[in-house]
Amino acid sequence: MKRIILVAVVLLAASVDMQAQLVKFGIKAGLNYANQTGSDITLNSDNYNTDAITSYHAGLVAEIKVTDGFSVQPELLYSTQGATYKNAAEEFKNELGYLSIPVLAKFHLNKTVSLDLGPQASFLLSERNEFDVKNAETFEFGVAGGLGFNITKNFFLQGRYVLGLTEASKDAEVKNSVVQISAGFTF
Image (cartoon, rainbow, N blue to C red; front, top):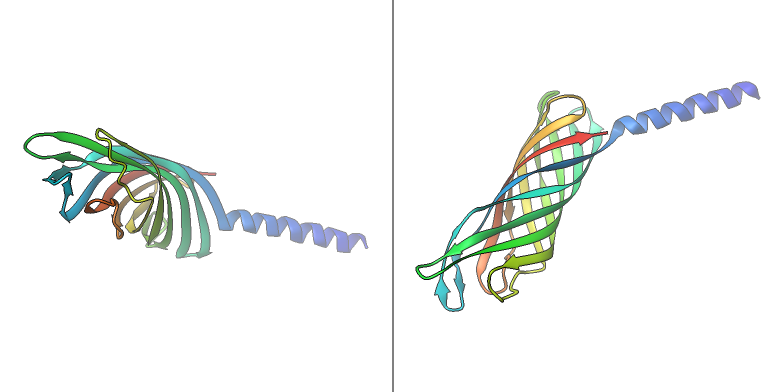
């Protein structure tokens, strides 16, 4: 009986250790270089050009190891995006705060570098601009792709491009696009 209990405890401890190696949790934060692109950016019957804004993102990550060369990385991020709108008469900044949920397939090219690709769903939490129109869509769907670099066992850097596939505005045919540079730490 003692041997059965001892074997059960050893197997349970090995199972917990194996599960800890399969899933890693962490945090990340970084800079966004965001813009809104579209064929016809018209607000209040005026045409505008857009310039990119620099903003930020931060949140939680998990990496689920599937095989030695492949893992899945879901994230929960707060990300600010938008653009600066300009025409001959005026200029204003439109900044949108999203809860973004990317789910990336990570193809590990070696122990240091990974290719990250996958979909991203974003939910609008806030809209800050210098005009009175609340015209942002509340849901956005996009695709993300980039590279990840494991600097140490627990510290990583990532570079990513996120392209919005759905309209970001109710009044104009614009889509979000953002380049993200991140640093993170896994536990």
